[in-house]
Image 1 (cartoon, rainbow, N blue to C red):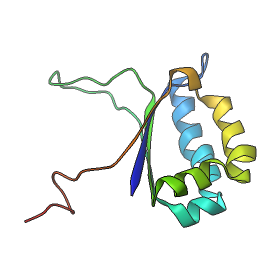
Image 2 (image 1 turned 120 degrees about the vertical axis):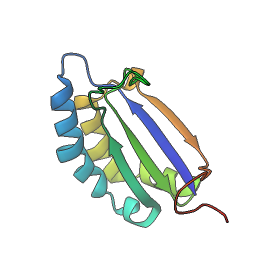
Image 3 (image 1 turned 180 degrees about the vertical axis):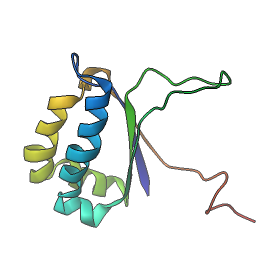
Image 4 (image 1 turned 135 degrees about the vertical axis):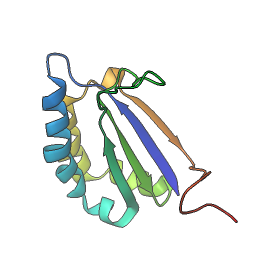
Length: 119
């Protein structure tokens, strides 16, 4: 299994609230429509920052994250090179994402606590 984590920045001139609404209501369903995603994407989660009332930590300057778990690197490639991704999902990304300032990290996930913990 391989995980892609994207730290997302909204397009210049777009309000954060509009970014979140579009990401959840428009982009998520478009991604879900990719036939190859049905076969290779094991999980897709969006996270958007909340206002914090604590001073023990602070949110980084991103508008959200997208976390995608794929069955393999080849599965990720199949999804991201699919016709639906290229013709539907990627064009949508250009309407609300600042690609130049969005960061992507692809790696293997190591469970420290939670459902997959040893012992």
